[in-house]
Structures are given as C-alpha cells and as structure tokens.
Length: 93
Image 1 (cartoon, rainbow, N blue to C red):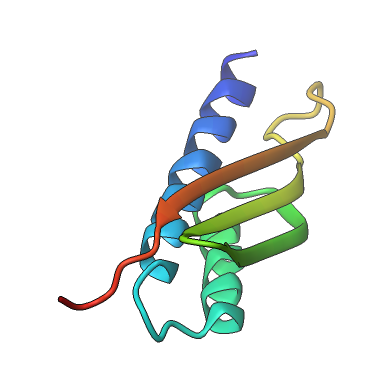
Image 2 (image 1 turned 180 degrees about the vertical axis):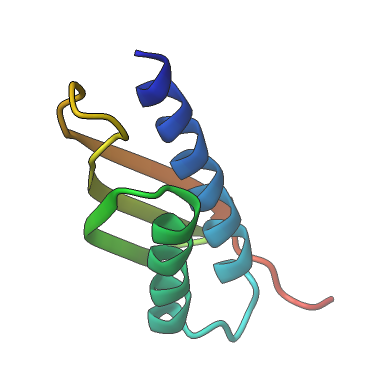
C-alpha cells in the first residue's frame, strides 16, 4: 500500500507543476501536456500514461492524467491512477 501512496503523491506533484506552468499566458497546451506525460514517465518508473490532458476552463487550467502503474516487484499488481490539478490563469499586469 505504501508504494501506491508514494506513486500517487509523485503523480500529483507532477500534475500540480504542469498546471502551474500551463497557467502562464501564451503557453502551448499541447507542448505542456507532452512535457507532463514525459515527467510522469521519468518520475514514476513503471507508469504507462493512458490519457494526459491540459485544458483551460475559464480562468483555470486543469491538468489531468490517467495512467497504469506497474510497481516494482513480482508480487505487486498494476494499478490505474488518476491525478488532477488546477491552477489559476496568470497574465502580465
């Protein structure tokens, strides 16, 4: 269970960072989503992203990822995790 909680926290941190970066005005959302997917794979070995999206919803950016995580070790079964984070859009003064 500890592995699963750690994986969830790592993925949540990546989602929060992706949402904050994408909240800056002029950010290419497709590029931000690609980077988010790469960060998940790099930070969480065994993660296989299924869907990774970053969208603007009014004044908020929403970063969401659904992925299957294959934990280390022969006795642990894969888990599907979903993480979501939001950040307020920012604009220069």
